[in-house]
Length: 216
Image 1 (cartoon, rainbow, N blue to C red):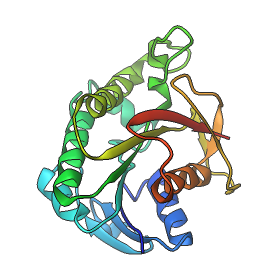
Image 2: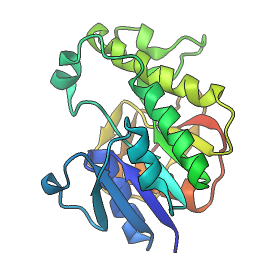
Image 3: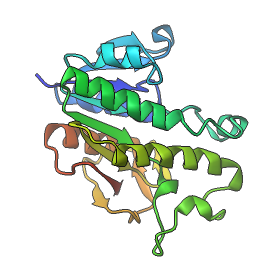
Image 4: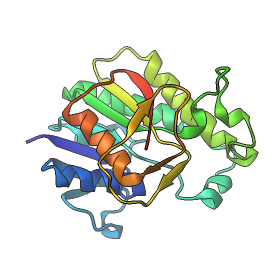
């Protein structure tokens, strides 16, 4: 049986991936900061993607890992983060790549951020305040730093960043989606269908060591 570990399993994307994995008969380990606060299927454990020892211990014995961690759960919380430590996603990338490589876990799926896709001129969307308000730019820059680290590190881990559009909705599971490149291609997607894309790439990997967009 395929087994996966989901970091950030208590968030909306993480919960959706957990549900989709369970639906398909995968064995799931859900990693959250406080297991007592969450009712999730499968095994629920305490962990922190920013703690290398925690990551190394939790990924062992799994076939793939998913990083669905966000440092805040909404616009107000994101704004309160202020400058945001730009190393947060770099640290997560390092810990995951090191932990998975050491444990022999071959596949890593990371949930990306729409604002670090690029426009037709190759400029990041977060530079346009009509796309992302200026007070959230620091969050997008930090996300991009994590993507850059994944691209820069030589690793045996087959990673993929799946980037949903700006409007990620609590809609029904249609079981279908489209994929695009660095510039995106759509404006909406349900969390359920984002999860379908994640589990598809775990069960049958089609994209390798790259970032793609996914939309309906």
